[in-house]
Image (cartoon, rainbow, N blue to C red; front, side, top):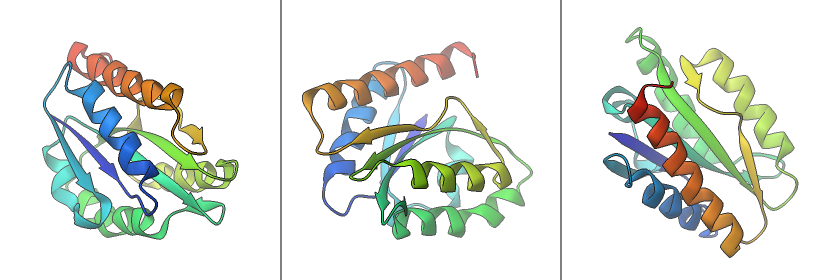
Length: 147
């Protein structure tokens, strides 16, 4: 089972997360969580977690960072490593959010399946298709044991 965790204030990340989940469902079961509703159980019961985060003020959106803060130590205490990958939805350039996430990921027991990606602006047909393909590709990789 693959989980998709997202935070969306404007609705952009919700659209992207839905497309990621559509892609995942071609190869695996998928559950979608809003970051505010997700807890450490998401990390524990998932074969992989795909994260869709918003950029706010050139960094990770607060609710998304709160999810990471809230789950880090309880997950760390389980002595496990989670497969994860992240899409950043950005109105600026997204680089600040990527730097912040990548720094957090170094201390979090994660194995990143792919470099953090940035989708800029309003979701276009091209970016929505990319999100679906991204979810499908990563879920196929998990299913095949590549990661």
